[in-house]
Image (cartoon, rainbow, N blue to C red; front, side, top):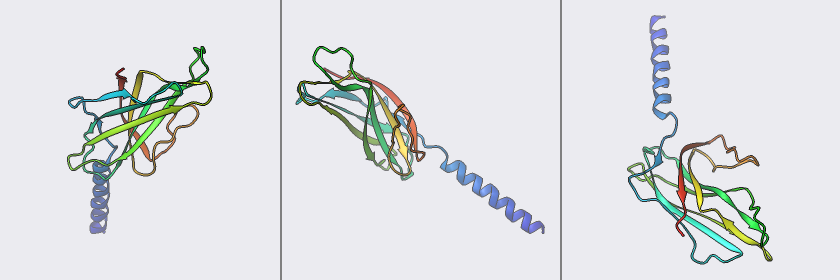
Length: 162
């Protein structure tokens, strides 16, 4: 009986150790590496794009998918209308960490408008980094991320270069 209790105790402690080792995903936008965002050179009145690049580090050696989401005011408006539409989320990825637990990312977003509408993407953006064990980040109408397999690991404010 003692051996059975001891075996169960060892099994429980072992499983707890594995759970702690796997734990919550980690990582961060590496501030020691250059990050930048720039508007596309082919932007027109009816089309606008933005591209952000940089490095996310501290991801460890776990096989995960990393997604970068560009968040900011963007959309289409009629000429002379100062009421620009709300937030937009542009999802890029998946990116796979290298053997050092880092990802170099290039994230893009674009808006294409019809007729005489004017495309708009704000120069003040937020970058969000997600680690997903399955699928990709999805957002509901309120902007909340709804995929339970994805975890937000870091955010970063960016100003787009002119």
